[in-house]
Length: 334
Image (cartoon, rainbow, N blue to C red; front, side, top):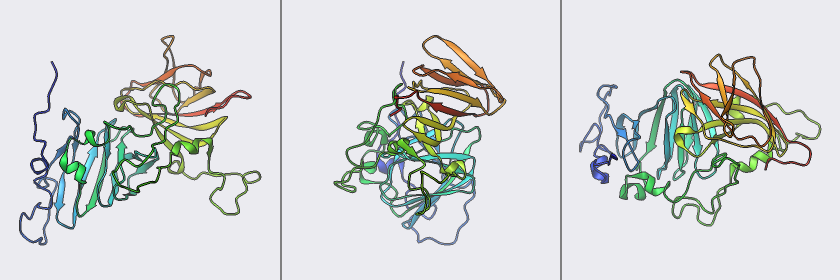
């Protein structure tokens, strides 16, 4: 027996609060809204309504809509966009927020801010073990004509394309979209694929016009400046891979798996060693044999080239593992 979403699907039915809360038809006046008096909305832009994001609205006027939404550990929101800019300020936890058309992700911590330009498709994940709280503001009109026509938002993006990901299949497949998803947006341009950066990260130009990659050492300050990719095709089984260094032959970085998750499988043409970074065990499942490598902080787990493997986090806390990876002479990653 399947569950069928029977709730309202018309824009006026799902967004009666839009530009009317809490003032209704009156002109805005000085007011205080508390978490208890905010307009609580559990936003569920998918066909069956089973995936929902808590999204209290504090104010929605003709100038702006603002509130706070949250993501539980392991949760996510799918691609969406707005006809005007949106800003985030992270109040609590860690958020990985990305550009669906380019595959670029940023790791945001409490106190960080992020600005999403108009019409840009964005999506977000909580790969940690603490609920993420995000204060948001969207200027003026909040949703595109496509969204207002069909609030089941998957029909606008997911049904005709997928976000750029690392390892949407077991073996890495290069992805680049032929145009921007938003109809008429930046017409004639092709969105860049962040996967290009895997050939050379950090960029050869460095941070200084005087940087010489053949002579100078490169320092990457802070993991927020690493190259981040959501990995795997299934939302419920994805994880994040972060590179501080990547070429066609050598790589160094981290993986992070949220609590209670078994990830999608990957296969690499190079050898990898994973160094678990916490007391919660990192389980590397050798998918084709059914065997596993289990390690905690201080251990090292070796995975030979061309070995299909996936990760399991059986604990209640997110698990991180540093990795180092290299191919043999004449073999490239990409």
